[in-house]
Length: 301
Image 1: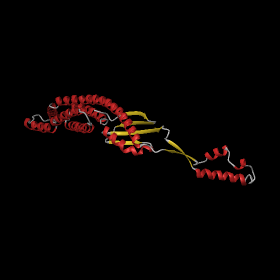
Image 2: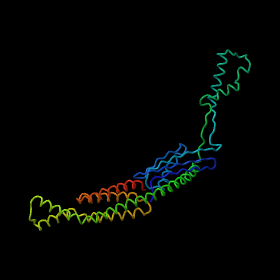
Image 3: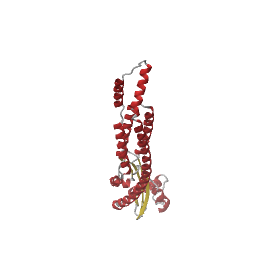
């Protein structure tokens, strides 16, 4: 048994590339995957989803990937020569007009200084940093490896949580069976209690001579209406199937969820049929245990 709650985070560095993958999973009716990848890794989203789908069967998975390319060829600086020349010409024009630098002025006044070059270089779009095209095969290999390691951590945590869930489910299921067995012991007395109450009521109404045959018929009809043998038998069967599912490997959450609903249905029917205070008390306790089962089952993969 595995829980749907898990967490894993791994970081792998190779050939100047650093990949970090974080995976968080919580309970969900089906498998639901939410991926956050850098723009440079958008091509790998389908591969990430397939890899997660192969590792997880149910649950909501949040996957967050960060990537750093630390290689020397990762970025390039590109000079927009045309734009730089326009800045240069504009500055020279300003010297010749605004500052009245004539044709006969010195070359120093008509050429750019290092400060001028720095100024032009600081202008928007003159120098642009571009990201080199990634080696998709190398990046995907690194991502696949890192994700696999993170999913191993998730699986380990889900299995650990699953073991705790299994123990908790087994305990509450044992309580349901104990309550069922107590109800089973009390069930035969329901017609007897009804007969005694009916006799007492008739005497209160002044009926001195009771028609025993008529009384027996009424008690038989009541006994048939409040018979819970079939419900108790089905309840025991469902408990046995849940025990098998709890110990089974693989995806058992949906089966356990269905069986929990069946347990609740049988207990509700028993409560509506058996008009006995002690049985009603046991039914309320059994419903409380089944509700605890239902809450825990929601976390089982």
